[in-house]
Image (cartoon, rainbow, N blue to C red; front, side, top):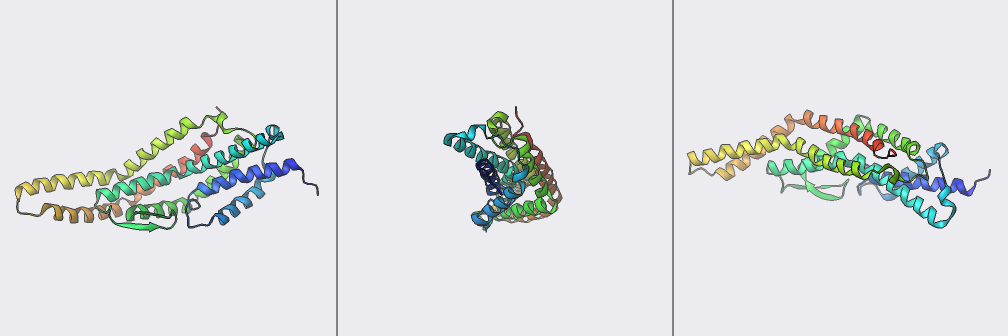
Length: 254
C-alpha cells in the first residue's frame, strides 16, 4: 500500500477543518470535555470522510501555500461552528435578560460546560437548549451539513470566495433579536409590576413597595418561566434548524 504526500496533505487539511469545527460546536465548546477528546472526535470523523473529500492542491506546491490552506481550513471550521452556536448565544442573552427582569441576576451558578459563572436562569436555559438540540436530532443535521461543506468548498478553495462576512454580521444581529423576543414576556411582566406597585405606593404610602414588589417579581417571573416553556422551545427548535441552513448558505460561493 502506497501513501502519497498529496493524500497526507489532504487528510491534514480535512482534520484541521474538522478539528476546528469540533472546538466550537455546542457541548464540545466548553471546558467539560477535554481537548484530547474533541481532537479524537475530529480525527475519527476526518478519517471516515477523507476518501470522499474533493481536493485541489494546486497552491500547496510550496510551504507558504500549504500554510495558507491550513489557515483557510481552520477559519472555515470555526465559521461553521460559530454559526451553529448562534442559537446558544441567543439563549444566553435571553437568560441574562430574564434574570435581570425577574430579580435573579445576583443568583449565580457554575456552568461546567462553559466553565463560567452565569445567572442560574442562564445556565438552566443553556442546558434546556442543549437538550432540545440533541433530542430533536439537530446534531445529525449539523454533521450532514458539515460533510456537505466539503462539496461546496472543497479542500483548496478559499472561503473568501463566498464573502461570508455580511451574512455572519447579519446572524450576529439576529442573535440580539431572538434573545430579546425570548425575554419579551418577562420584560412586559416587569413593566406591569413596576407600574402596578408605583400606583400602589401612591395609594398606600406606608407600604414597603420595594420589598413587596421584589418578592412578587420573583414569584410571578418563575411562574411565567414555567408557563412559557413551549414558547422558548419553539424559538430554540426553529432557530436551531435554521442555523443548519444558514451554515451552508454562508459558504456558498458568491
